[in-house]
Length: 309
Image 1: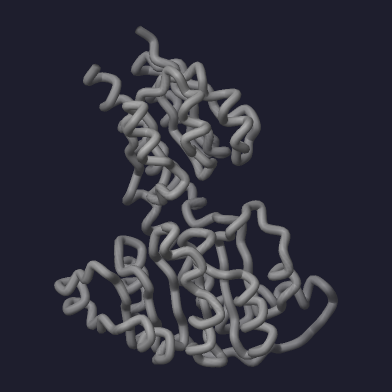
Image 2: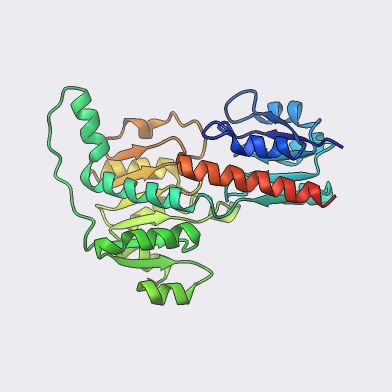
């Protein structure tokens, strides 16, 4: 039997065709996202009904969508975040769900470090000024010696700690599941959330989205922060209350933020007009090496599942 596989990430096989070639060589019939962008619920419902397997992006895979996927047996989320997948619905429908939890780590951690440095030295804003004919030298600050708070000391948060080592920063962390061996090795101090917020010069978020975590960074959170805080979110959209962040950045021009993920994507909101906010379009995993590794891992997951049948 020739199984039909749909890939809905907008870039699958574009950096390197090897993942597509691997699936095809194993006898799978593969269709890539015909829209070249994130699918809407209606588009997903219309396209999914004829496929046995799905390599998914960030589109909503809720009960409504999965109920229309009559033949779907296997779903691999390309990346680590799984908040777009309705696990209860998948379980009821006997759809096996997996992800690629490790391949993105270096890409997101390096982008996070870049975002921190850009904020502290106003790199993005200085570039925009020059391209608009404005020669203005912003006075920034060093990362060296700062206190960096990391919310979520998992794979990406841990890799960021390693990347920060040459800057001789003090690292605080908050995580419900404390990896004490890693913390001891890398001189990370686990603290309460309130202590992390009030003590950190830089706060970087590396936690999955859940209903409980929605708007974790809100008005109350920001009221406890330093007035020159650098806030970074390259994790998941929805963790930051964007309205509260706008008010904080407006009231505290010495503060800054870097966001790679947003509550609604594509993002076109008022943060685009703020000089002390740097934005990128959800590109944490968009490094060629990362994409190839993620896609090859997803392809192999598909092969492993269907070859057992």
